[in-house]
Length: 580
Image (cartoon, rainbow, N blue to C red):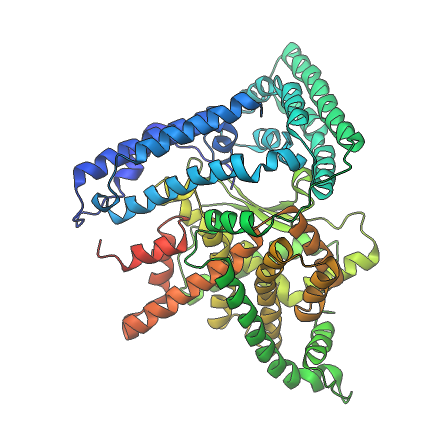
């Protein structure tokens, strides 16, 4: 989630809306807590200026934090002070909305302690050290004049050599996978200090002397990045750490990151059962479609083989590498019109969505993503980042396009854009509590996007047996993400078994499966966020439908659910059932 721009003094006005007139909680305690939150946000940005910039608070754009022992102590001192402050409040005295903010702040502090003292990924994940993205955001921003942004860029570059020297001191026995990622992303991202910076300087009104100073520092910056890459390439690493997190660390990270009503073992079982249910539904549809796509060919005895053969035929309907991005761009207004016609929820037409080629510093993990502005810069562009197939072999491109065929590409756009991530994050920025935006829960964000896929098809979007079959295939991806992630990091699943799961049971193309294996070696827990959040949101909706009967209104449910920002679903559930 990128960008934002509301002066911090406005936060008081935002959070004051948190209080319901009908609350039975002590209003003086809530006012005190609202005041505490103002101070918390101010202190948070002082410790994490890069995070501040990413959510649109740009007063600290010129600051580059050096990741050394002093910075670690500063983080832990900040956490200790916040946890001490939270002890002043009796949770029962707060309004329901402030209870949620209390839990989210405490969870974030616990997560920082866990990351610093237990995970220690700063030692084994060299890809955590990469300045390119934050500098690219300064160049790409529209929150201030180009000249002011370039001056911040200039000052921030002062710290780059020290930043990478600190990174070298921190790294011990890194994983091979994260080392390769760090090399690729830093090399690709360094173009920010060359072609992209030169283009910005050409457009600027800076003096020749100012431009020369910036270009000289840029050369130093590129050298520091190149030196870091060379250092990683030559680093003796006879005992690299495994990329697998292990059962204990994984369970704790799951609880802190997902903040679900389910634990790891529970969601794993739900996902395995859901996979079987999807296979049953897919067999019915594939069996029905067999003659249409396979003619009089004999049906295989194996159900999964039958499903795969039908899916493989349908998957031949796809666009070309050259038209992939333009096809996405074309579908966005169609989805917007459909949501409006079906009255599924309000979509603000004033919040721009821009489809763009995925920037080099982001490459290597996911093929499509959203970069959204935060609550300080609500009107800035949301970017739909589309991975490029430039340089791919014809075989790999064809495999990728079969995966993102004409049906699934539409579901992808529902997930990433309308009414998925783009729509939800616009709503999140309107939340009266800034805490629920800046401490947004990934499982709620991803869960909403997955929920939106099924909701759209339930409403009748492009209704056909083919679309439903491909939706179930896509939903299998979400389901198997959870099975894969837990199995790889806690059950020692091999690469061969992982690829079998993805290609044979989730019917993924080889290129997609290879990419997912790469992703599971580079991340932990995040792949569980999709299915966990989706399961909780869908169950909440169905429970409310039963309770409200004829009074249930889908649009009202969507808009109320989204009004609580990006809070964990378990807290949104409490808020939606609350009398406040």
